[in-house]
Length: 163
Image (cartoon, rainbow, N blue to C red):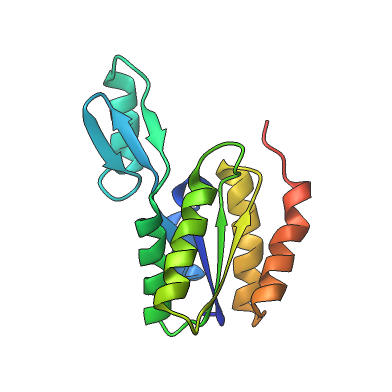
């Protein structure tokens, strides 16, 4: 584990093995199927999601995680002994997740004043976001500091594209 914790949202589509390998904290988005709400990969597995997608009369809607879920991810990283955290989330033009992550970071800074937190707007989503997160996670795993991990992510942001 590196000295920088990497935090993202579940829109990054990172497989569990990579999340575990790099100790990436993943904050779940929520899906609304009719009257039922589910947390991505928490109360709804990918298989269950696709089953509901096939049987639902309407497409699901999504909702960004709230600031409290990001605060909990920062707390979790702090409990692991990490003092520097980089939170890379879905692009702010696509969802409200960036704003929620910033609010969560502000709350964490009040509660954990000794921790350094940066929130990065990836300007993308899905696997593109996953690649940006992995660039930072690999840098952190190789001993990078917060600024170096953020630089690795920022270097990739203009080079990933969603079609």
